Length: 237
Ligand SMILES: [Zn+2]
Image (cartoon, rainbow, N blue to C red; front, top):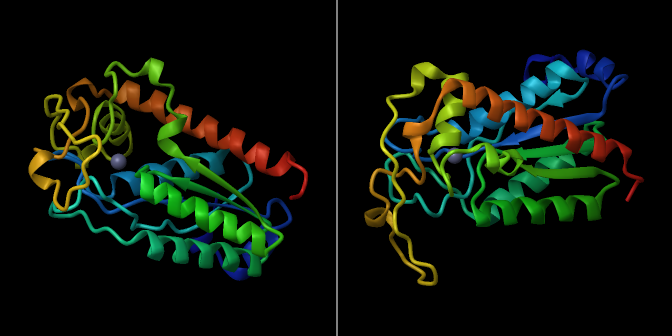
């Protein structure tokens, strides 16, 4: 498996003979209910990237551990950066991958906040405008077939994420809390949302199982493999 952080430059150069594509996992440091660790989004994206790299030739970059978290702000452990900071960081990384010899980057984000995704998209657009570089942007959560999820509208720290964490790091799953769907305003812009969020879950962790987690992980892996094929087969921009 071609894990960039564990390789020497000479090994990376030899790796270029089989692939010049790298997966950049992007996560967040964010509360995930009273039962999941703050690196839940990061570790999911990283584990999917590693499984993809076990099945085909592709590099995996060290993950970005911070993202833009709006709906969970105010909780102990939600450490958000601004959309500007994420955009600048990811744009710099994309250009640096190109300067280092890579021809394509697949950004795989395990965190899916609206402003977070928008910042990643802007960075990607700027990078492809500036360099002869292929960039794909994949949101891990979108790769899950919701018809296989028991909980309608399951989201943050719910059935899906808890199931996946049972597969990835069962030792860090501290119970399976009851379902919780905090009421959130549709239109109102609020300074503070912490008091609306209860225990920080938006979904039903009580429905989580390891078997479901394995299936959800496989859906993500297959989705990323498909995105890589697209990235490689599309004619140059
Ligand atoms: Zn999450």
